[in-house]
Image (tube, rainbow over all chains, first blue to last red; front, side):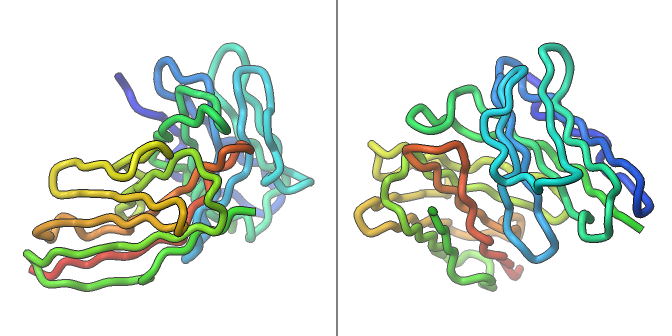
Length: 117
Length: 112
């Protein structure tokens, strides 16, 4: 059973370009979380998605960031018009159960490291 | 809002020593608490998951305990090895809401 797959592992973009990060959850998992980790800081929640639904995007910046988890294919975190402050490691995690009262175990991918020049 | 704190931020021990990592959380209304390990430049590897109805979990040389009333969890590592060197993170999952709240981690170095 393959783990959570993220690509690309490393991405370099110039200011103003777009970054697209992809995440395929573990087989059988329909719940995806995106977290951001800045250097020397902890993991910060961004968004929680189920298939075709955004459940909680309270951690997403209001502008330039969007996420989707289509019926077919991986979850995508999209950052438009990147700025240097977007440089970070972006981690995807999947869970087999609902969060909240039926929270399950989280499984993480290896992350996508975005560098904005 | 749940806040998770891990102390110490960094720890260095000689090989073979037993050690304890601490995790505290402000809201005791949690459902699960999960411990992870993160190696430099890598993702997070799940170590132990403690559900709210449990008080501890064990896996090999690792033992994690949970005391919801005091808002604390500890990760005990027995007979530490250089390969245990990594950053250890705890995450609290609240009864309501959708986030897993992470501490900033304890960076462990085991000296051969």
